[in-house]
Amino acid sequence: MLGTGSPLVAIKEKEEELRRRLERAWEEAEARTAGAREEARSQVVEARREGKKRAEIWLQEDLKKARQDADAAVAAAERKAAAASHRGDESLQAAAAWVVDTVLPQIPGVDLQALSAQSLHARALEEQV
Image 1 (cartoon, rainbow, N blue to C red):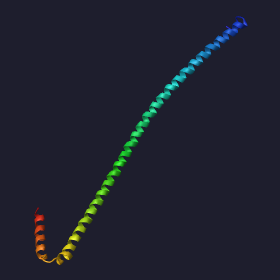
Image 2: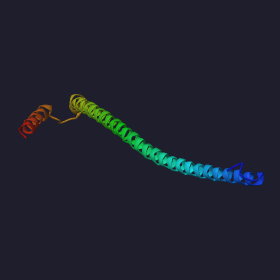
Image 3: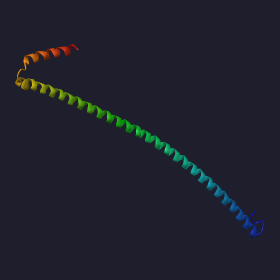
Image 4: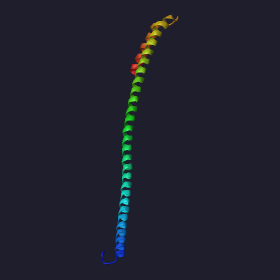
């Protein structure tokens, strides 16, 4: 079409062609921008979803470790309590033996042979139960 009219017409035609090309480029840029925004939104949503999933996995692993640590602490405390109880039983037996061997003979009127017979009778009754 250029070359069929005056130079002013050719310039107007060229301006019109450039304007149309610029509008198409603008529309394409807007479409690409909208597409990029939508893709970015999708990526953000997916990243949040993945982050929540990883956080849940981490939380479950941490809870499992905390439970294991708590179970180990309870078991250790139970072992310590059993050992202390055993030591207490031994101490009680030692104290009782000391009382029988040292204190009771010094009390006037205490018959150690009678106490010993009663103790044997009490033990026999406990064994029957």
